[in-house]
Length: 439
Image (tube, rainbow, N blue to C red; front, side, top):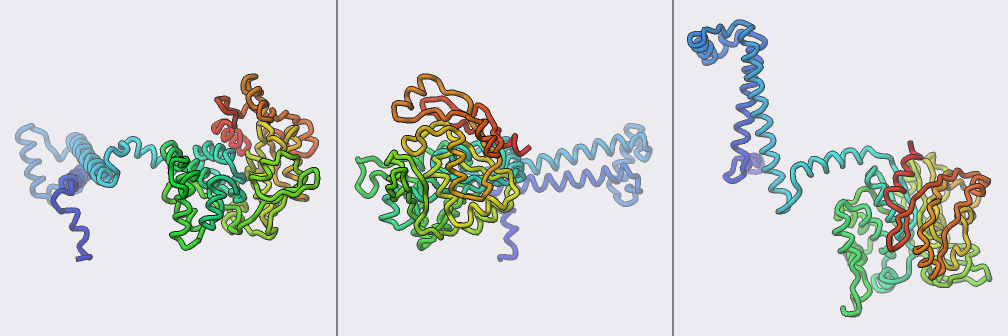
């Protein structure tokens, strides 16, 4: 019976038989029209058509064998046949799509737009972005409107909050930043964002309290795949139907260590950020952590490599400390861009201008050319927002572009911020600026 599975299309209730029949009628009419138009003696081949011709001649006194008659008639019949074929195809597609989509699913016009969008985005530029935190997710939301050939290489040094608890309890790499990036790249982002970023509060049992749903989802997939974190992230990406790929910067469990300006060494990303001290240098333990082969290939064949936006020392630098990533960026022929932060961070980048951010990143990959362009925001936030941020020790990053030029980089000045209740980069402005460099 497997050889006759196609007969199921003829089963009752499939709602395709009438439209398939209409297709055959349409094809038949088109064939008849062609025979008329090329005048190949169709009346000798088709007896019934010969009778129609005779009837037409007797009733309308029109000789159907004459070109002045058979050409208009052939065109008319062909048009009717093509309409039949179009209607049948349309209805068959509606019947099939209606069965596959969930109840209340997208309309036909939306489906056509989605197919067109997916095909167009698949031909977009190959872009690799590196970093972590909310800054990277902000950039990804903008870039996915231009291309689906995105590879996000995400830092895995977060040891605070839900991620930190899962490192201990589930023995996995921190999922928080990867979750943010996958949600940012998902097609149905608003609904997913609400669900995946939902955090269980203190009213829930101790096992759930403090965790976000998305982190637990990745932890469950990791356990389901017998501890294979790479496969778990790939499966989560597939389930979320993201536009692009998300890779952890390394599959090695690493600890971020920072040496402060006063000589103190602090372990752990969260502890470094909370220390609010100026940082001298950073490194990973173990120092020989290797990146995924897919990450290195993505960098090699990229059209653009973008660092940031994000915390210099705890989001961007940790990616560069993974053995092989800085070398791959240096060798890549891609357009290389660094997106400078809008505001400083207490201790970590206190008193930093844009050029200081550039220097801090370059210092952790000596001898490597990590970027050629630096996107620097020149739009000063409102006095109200500035006052709000200054109250927690954060200040506007001054766009000292002359110093950046003197360092051998090309600064790109612009208004790249979104001013709402919080101050952050604007997704559309940022993506548009990067694409201007590409073109």
